[in-house]
Length: 138
Picture 1 (cartoon, rainbow, N blue to C red):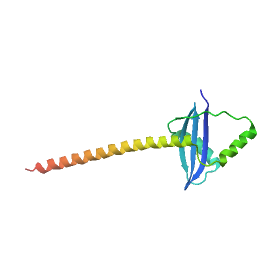
Picture 2: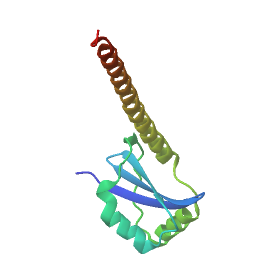
Picture 3: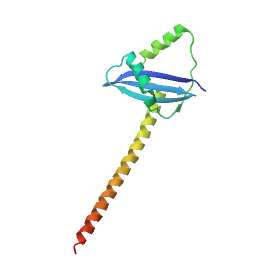
Picture 4: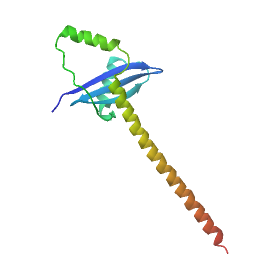
């Protein structure tokens, strides 16, 4: 079984705090976006992760380059500082989120189209029924 890496990036996107879960598994990147209300604390983030991880809807997988792990503690600290100072999310994550949005958009369109057709059919049946009711008396 391959290595699975999960990274949570939290940033402020007017007017809410947004969390982006980036899951890298087998050279593929999947992303899930979560909107928090107020600024979440570390404990709240950990609790959210524990309670709602199974409910997260990850985007379709996008190919990505696997990164090697760094063992030097000072370098790890430098990398952590650099990541916390950086703003926003990665470009690949944005692409994955866009893919997920496009999928959701197609699903919404098909559902609304089906609802409209069902409503038209219902109206047609109602008109036909009224038409036959008018002619029953004569």
